Amino acid sequence: MYIEIDFNSDEAIYNQLCDQIIMGIAAARLNDGDPLPSVRQLADDIGINMHTVNKAYTVLRQQGYVKVDRRRGAVISVEPDKANALAELKESLRVDIARAFCRNITREDVHKLVDQIFEEYESRKM
Amino acid sequence: MYIEIDFNSDEAIYNQLCDQIIMGIAAARLNDGDPLPSVRQLADDIGINMHTVNKAYTVLRQQGYVKVDRRRGAVISVEPDKANALAELKESLRVDIARAFCRNITREDVHKLVDQIFEEYESRKM
DNA sequence: CGTATTGTTATATCTTATATATAACAGTTT
DNA sequence: AAACTGTTATATATAAGATATAACAATACG
Image (cartoon, rainbow over all chains, first blue to last red; front, side, top):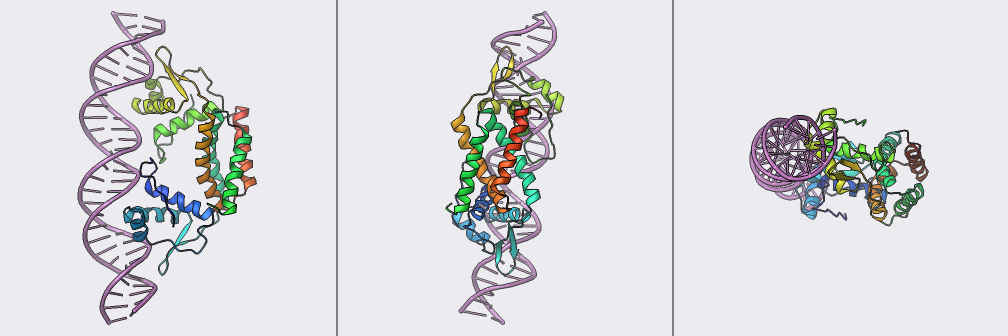
């Protein structure tokens, strides 16, 4: 688990953790069935509190990225919920693209960025 | 000024305000040189505190969407900072697309969304 | 069986962020 | 002169985030 936390960020630690794990799944560094470190171990590795990791795992479970097996601990398990995910993505893109649009970033610029990021995830070189 | 605030959202009110004003600029409902309502007036209209509006205006100024003229108050004034905006957009897209990618949303799906949103802003029908 | 580890829950505490409330100030505008 | 502008200062209340300690039931392992 390569996790990088920016302690000076305005993003909550547990949120950064969620993001990194989700990007890890997208980049196929984490695959369905893979176990996550125990909350205590990951907390120790990063140097944060156990409950902060636990909160991240809880959110990931609620959002359908992780299931908890009593025997194996937290395990990657992505629930495909494409319709809902599309709606959420659109809401997020509305704001991001508004900011970009104000700065004269073009539709083609955004398409290029999207392609770049998809290639990063598809080539699994994160 | 048509501002909609969701008081049950986990997004801070001042942040929702910033987002809505930025989307208003993108949709050309607000144009360079247009004055924003006074902090007291907008606060009254929405039913929130003056300082919450003031914080939003301060953030918008720091991010280069607004300038303050002693004579005219807060005025829309977008600083084009394309390079920086591109970098920020990419960081934001990385997380959004990771979530989408996990849910089997394709590159083409994202391109369609991007086009839809650009058309919304370009047609100025927000 | 006994020990260690798992996720989970429960308190408690501390810091920071958010929002509100009053008040005041200097500079415009009318 | 009166009304308005953004801004600043101070104070307060609530919520969010992070940490600390402790305990519990279930599982894994020797």
